[in-house]
Length: 274
Image 1 (tube, rainbow, N blue to C red):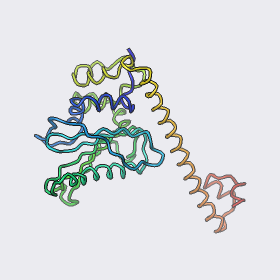
Image 2 (cartoon, rainbow, N blue to C red; image 1 turned 90 degrees about the vertical axis):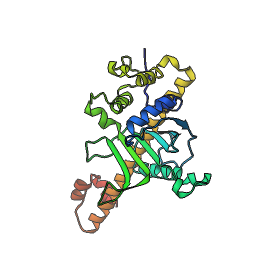
Image 3 (cartoon, rainbow, N blue to C red; image 1 turned 180 degrees about the vertical axis):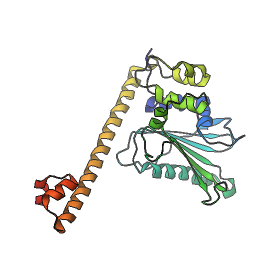
Image 4 (cartoon, rainbow, N blue to C red; image 1 turned 180 degrees about the horizontal axis):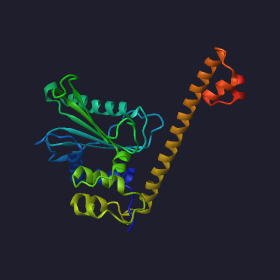
């Protein structure tokens, strides 16, 4: 039996966008909800159109829902990372929060919005932590906070590198996302012991998808590969522009060509043409 990767747009939405009880379990496990604040019932709400991040048109998977308390939850699976992504998440959650007033709510009736972003790249190089929780808190008294918006970012590669073996549901769901890859044939036995995780794995069976769906699945990976190349090219172009600017400045200050070439990585021929 072969399985598909749960991080793909097709599979992620099939599991978490079509089965509310699985999404409820996932959110209760991943979100920093206080005791007695667990999600009991959810209903899906349509994904909204939000501004695209340049170079990232296809790599963001968005699933939204609201619960019986009126709280909204935005779940995003982000395959690639740029510095603009956090701004997009902030915009997305803030818009969902403010839009509640369109339905006649007073300010005091506004319900919290939680944004959960699962990122398939490392973006915080200064820490080994993979789980990042942001809230609006008092800078001197963190226990004092303003309710309304909360954000969770999970760096999936960091989680995978830690090889955690705890049986906590949060750990098991993250293992589901990181240990099952395209073409996996042998599933982790301990994940099969958890009914909701086992069910989510069953929906990944390649044989359960039509030929057209599998073509869509492959097309998504192609789009991710293309976007990654565009990002790398843009980064290289930006680094070259920076090096050229430094070279011009050094040349104006009288540095010799070999020294400029050594410090900037540019060729002597290019520096002489500046």
